[in-house]
Length: 278
Figure 1: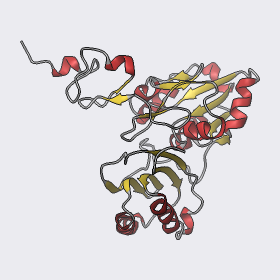
Figure 2 (figure 1 turned 180 degrees about the horizontal axis):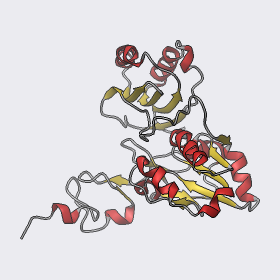
Figure 3 (figure 1 turned 90 degrees about the vertical axis):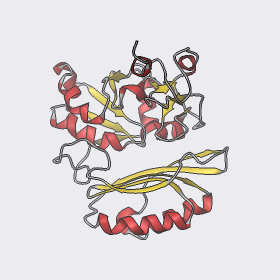
Figure 4 (figure 1 turned 180 degrees about the vertical axis):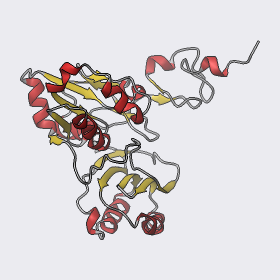
């Protein structure tokens, strides 16, 4: 463990028909505990990314579990030297992970999970797998599993279209899909099953859960995260990846060396948009 700030991420698909009534109590408890981050509340469930002291995080979990619908939520835990969030937000959303398909309801049905240890063993054994990265293109470029198939999507809402464009021959192949923490795969697995894929598994706990359980075996690069750390390595430590202030594109170390990268102004991905007209 390194760093004194505790970072947690967790989610739960559950019927939260009273989500509006949950917003203010969550704001209040996070304020009392000096936590920062984001909590998303939707009728379909809760999704949160928080950071603070160990005692503050422990008290928040105790408060959360006073609601029986939100007990034993699996947590991704890491540590940092500084607070990775600027403020505390508790937001009401239509979905805790936006897909735009109302019939996809993970609280009622979702794909089979595979543990990181079992997934690693399949790769070690040379099993014939379709390893599917469900994340956005800019996340994939920071790091992914060896031989993973990337969908080149800019938003999770593009996932159903991208699945529809895959070769029909893949539908009987053994599929293991993954995302950062598992939440996207809860919905993505249903999209694939509805599209006719017959053997779909989702990596339990996502990439971060894999790092925690088995380390960086078969992984290449870092993992993009949605906070000021930008990316973590398989040891769950912050890396040298940064994000362009202008366009929010994550930049690897070699990309930061480009003359197009000017802190708070531009990078190679957006330089043409910020150049002054002749």
